[in-house]
Image (cartoon, rainbow, N blue to C red):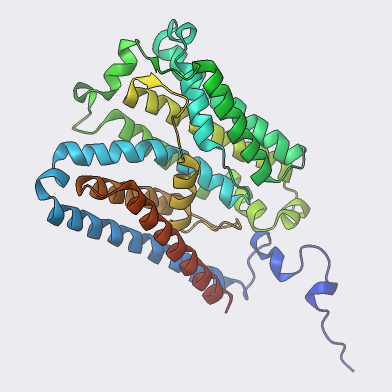
Length: 350
């Protein structure tokens, strides 16, 4: 008599269905992976379509104001700061984590980089300080989570509170004005390249680098594997703890870059900088197709999510709609995106 095949629960580690993301694709897994990949492309095209519709709506409701070159440049510039943060957050979520501290890290980096002592070193001093502070905060998050065993939600929530408190202590509740001319000049129209603000070019560079890192490097493959199934990734030879540390370092670096961009835009450092950036970044990643459970996501989708949210905010502002209406609209979009994700997952498993 032929013995029945062993069930998944009796198989060794890495043999079950849950370990599929980190194991070599089999013939049985291939169609599902192709379906999910196709749906990711469809989702990105859908987001692009939504963006086109929003531009059309803005052009109809406020044609003179919305389609003005200055307003379009403003939308892209505002999207650039939160967009850089979102790239880092996307990596963290794909890797199976979460980062609630990005807004606070932006605030801390911005106020530390605009102290009088730092400004004595000019442009390089401000940029270097912002990036180092972001990296240091990301390092603390990564060590606590990867090697300290803390849950990402708790560790980053603690960092949120600590970084906000330290930023407030540094500024004493006051705005720190930037006096370095070379930094302030980056926000002026004279510095635009072919009509494109320099900060938008920085955002584009970070996006391209993030896309390449996720889709064309071993680092990206390891990130997806760790987020899909950390135990299977460990058995495959991946240092899971070190990979998680790198992800939070990357998120911190993105926050440091965003902090410098915010300094350029506002000409100051404030402890209130980056307020609710964590919510905006996570929301943009979610509607872009990144799974909160980890293991799947795209940089392109996250960037489109940022542009959709920024365009909606701009349209609401031009039409004098209250901020509470904007938050309600964002909440509805997030819920719709999660429902679409659930349907996509069910479809991919069939």
